Amino acid sequence: MSESEIPPVRKTKKITLPILQKLKNEGQKFATLTAYDFSMASTINDNHIEVILVGDSLGMTIQGHTNTLPVSIEDMIYHTKCVVAGAPLPLIMVDMPFATYSTAQDALITAAQLMRVGAEIVKLEGKDWLIPIIAKLSEQGIPVCAHFGLTPQFVHQLGGFKVQGRTKSAAEDMLNNAKAAEAAGAKIILLECVPVNLAKKITKAVKIPVIGIGAGKDTDAQVLVIQDILGLTKRPARFVKNYMDQENNIQNAIKAFGQEVRDGLYPEPQHSFES
Ligand code: KIV
Image (cartoon, rainbow, N blue to C red; front, side):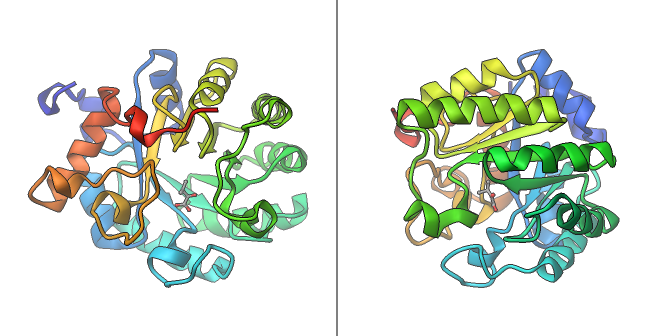
């Protein structure tokens, strides 16, 4: 799809969960980028990226920590407000910070604070223990994205930022967790650092959209961290593509990322992991 072919609905209309669901149903891919501030959110808005993630990756990209654990609910509220002010069109997804959703009651309190400042869907990292929490939030009208695979809030338990789902039993567990999350009411699944074949299987097994990062080309959508696509990360992960290598300004780099995702040109095999 070339720039001139982007349908008006994705250029001028507010992106909602039903629109993303329709894209999945029709086999059309969509793009997601992180943003943490007004000017970047506004630039992403103007270049037709469908979803903005206010990621707790801001712990690393904005605050300079080595992981996402120090990020607080106050940080997430502040950055969500900044992003919402600049991005009227993309769907706004916001991360629930580390250890703020270990019970359904805690999750409800955290999610409500984020929804009140403009989050339109909240993202939670975990495994099977997430399922009752997803059910509770969904029942209360809070849309949920369930993040499986490499879950950076569990970096110490995982022993580093490593590809997940490589053994038969880990792959089966992830597939079952994705199906259970959908049954509990999740609106989106996000898979991080998962072998291509497993991500493909999960994407086929659920009806809701699956967003991938380091999960190969077969997911319904892709997400990258904005600093990564702009070449600002010192040691980028294998799945990162620096769009400033081919474009002459930030606006064009963002546009090119969206375009390549919609056209199925990003990610390529060198950005992906085999089992
Ligand atoms: O916090 C974040 O930016 C994320 C993405 C890397 C998926 O969770």
